[in-house]
Image (cartoon, rainbow, N blue to C red; front, top):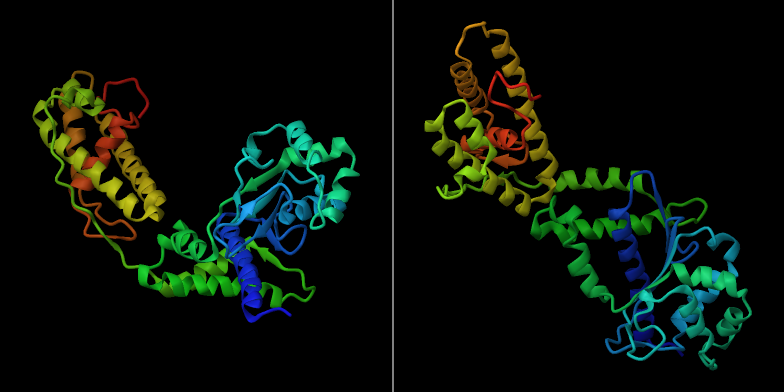
Length: 369
């Protein structure tokens, strides 16, 4: 008779499968689909993954472990379908036993894997699966084993829930810390509902639909704007000449602007790093912000070029171009998702564009800006 604790551990195994499927959904490419209990516990039509969870922390993956032999046997049974797959994964919380055939498994060549498993002595536990394997065409068996990866010693259900899912960047960067668990439980409920609401009883996660629901629900947990991380970085005179924008300022004889430019550049760089570290989701926003600065200044440069005359002082005109660029972009202190942006940030990002050679200060330069 199955005890209540046995039933609970079995249910936990199914919940663990849903948790792994959720992570796969969070990481999946747009337009793809994730299947549960169809060609493996989890499949995307390219990779088939078997999920094995145990509450026994000391469980070892030994030569005759049923999880491996049953998984391999199932692939062989459905070979006409599985032969088109790129990878087979055994995701298990068990640890590979030292000295077993699975030690350094993922580093072995296909013929080495094949030789090891065929040398295993069968027992009552794996006999039916073992028989299916050894009778299979050796060339096709090697083809399967070449794609067969073992991910052992994976996090238990509780660890996976807390360390992998709650701290997943897709959740961590959008949802406040004290609300992440509530949001995560909604997502796990969504995974279950896709089977409940399926007319065909095919457990399928359409990633585009998943993302739409994810974003819609995330909007209810809209995270507060990040407070702009103020930098107090200061310039080191010994490294000043290492920067390209310094050489540009020297080239147009604007040496008295080097000190303030260095300060703005270093502060803006440090603030940007801190913003991305705090909220990775801002990376694209900040990249687009730099492009906006670049576009504005390049457009401004065109107007300055149009005003050049044959005998004008090019370097003086270049200095005026730099001054006006600083004046125009210094008020661009609005960044979506960030509050309290300091004026040094746009100035520093202008200098970043110069440093990356997207913008050339000398109006007489033949370089593209």
